[in-house]
Image 1 (spheres, rainbow, N blue to C red):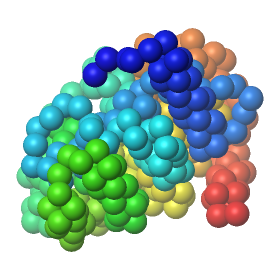
Image 2: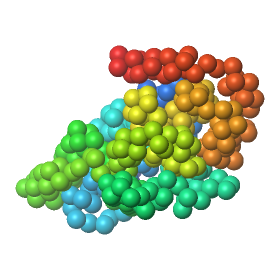
Image 3: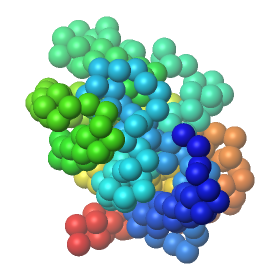
Image 4: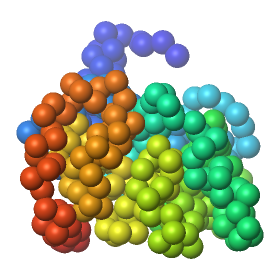
Length: 312
């Protein structure tokens, strides 16, 4: 559809600029640690693309189609209906997760076949081996198929977004009211938030116990999801929140998380290299003296205060 006149073009461009500023402000509201640095244009773009993919995944589930363009995106974005902290945090966490996973997989000397989920497939405990199989399957689906992205939402957030997508599709006369309502009810009734990789990883870590603490503390050996889940079990901050801390441009939160595990400086150096990839040296110069001076008890106390801040 073309633009009728120059005034329409100005209106369209203005709307897009305002939507960009709105997304920037939303990102600032959920980023931690809070600071004066604005989120980069690259981060804003990646979060926007993740929100678009999330919206498209719900549309595909509702309409039973494989369209590559979300028909509800324009209305939802322009109206501000996607400006929900839970949605912004979800998109931001998935963006950080993608980058961390890429860094770990490309890090020198790391073999996926030697990571804990694969090793556990042959475990004599059938429950552990079955959960490892489910985790690997869920990880593969989350990486390769954006059409399943909505399944990683918690039930409350999916309910909110699903009906907003339905409303936008009805506004655009994409389908009949009854058809969309029935499809939405089916989608919501069959949703199982416990099937996403981080949820499975949390259960697996719980059943593994102390025998695997050394492997879980190292993302090169455990894989990203089990590494984050083990930190979540220790600190209770939530997997998405921890992902953002680990992927933050500021290294201080990551150092505190690792110091709370009483890891040595040499161990932390390898972990940082795996998580930060080729940017490790540039992003965190001279961190070793800072880490060596930290006290594990004080580190855990600082982390506990983050949880209290998040509850306020």
